[in-house]
Length: 112
Image (cartoon, rainbow, N blue to C red; front, side):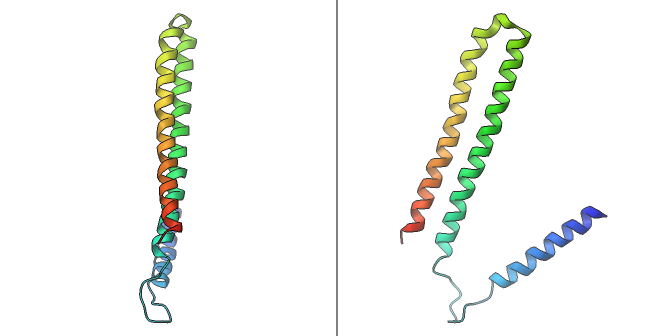
């Protein structure tokens, strides 16, 4: 019952705010000059936030699994370390791509 109340409350709040955003401005034009800039800023924030979150979770998982493997078999240290470092570098490149995308989207905010 609590899930139904929470879900219906969230939907109700969402629908009311959407109707408020759908209203026309006082000048009668339906478009806002800052819509594209606002969307680009939100996209930049989401790109860097989700990119960093995903990369951090993946790096934690890789390090945990590699250390677990080394703890179980210390003789395999050399065979585990190289693929682990390569995997961490590739995961970090994903975070850098997210930063690059956020930078380009943020550049669209200032331009016209």
